[in-house]
Length: 317
Image (tube, helix red, strand yellow):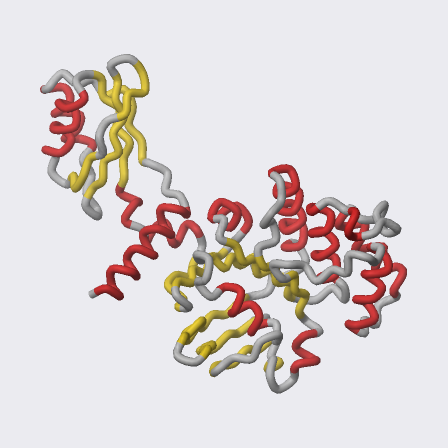
């Protein structure tokens, strides 16, 4: 177990930013920390890295308590905040050598920094002034400083924010590369990014941990797993009424014409229900040919909205 977070809480007066969050991260995981803006993601990361003291709770990095042994614990962490801590007037090489000295790394400096620059595509940029680099390359420099010392745990807070699509793809590939040799915690509010990169996902809402699992595990817990896409040829209203009449159907979205005379419907079923056989018989009886039938793919966005909505309804009650 590389990281253990136990009962982590942070309060600002009467406001609670993070409340009783507990989880653990194994070596080799790419963990996604997901939540809306203001959910508490960055606050939790700042406490894990030791930049912010918790109100209560404990954090252990490879067995070292971050508050009791901060220097030993921080040696095992590389951190990229949402706004990279760069010195724009420095060259890339000067900045990385500066960070190397701050971290008191024992690895051979020249060889170590050359290796990092090679991995991140910065080997031709070491003499360039940071402020003259593109946003994407500045982000690479930020990741490079997090990698200095080759820490076991690398924490990235919104690493693709503000990047253009090409730069986003490049940074995502770098994160995949990091995940092969390091444990990575990635914070983001971009759901597709978390789903594409992370082997495990934590969802935080109003400072509370409301979900923990792989995308597949979260999907299996989601009510959306019982959604079907049905394409029928014929009158749209007639098709919708037929679908609503099937035992086990809970709702049917209005049909969308996908080709001349053919409508696609999103059909929600009760848990464990299977309407397909009755659908076949009723479609034949009512002369509504089935032109397509499939389970609708559940996205992380579906799961996220479902969990957030459920939490909000529970709070209102």
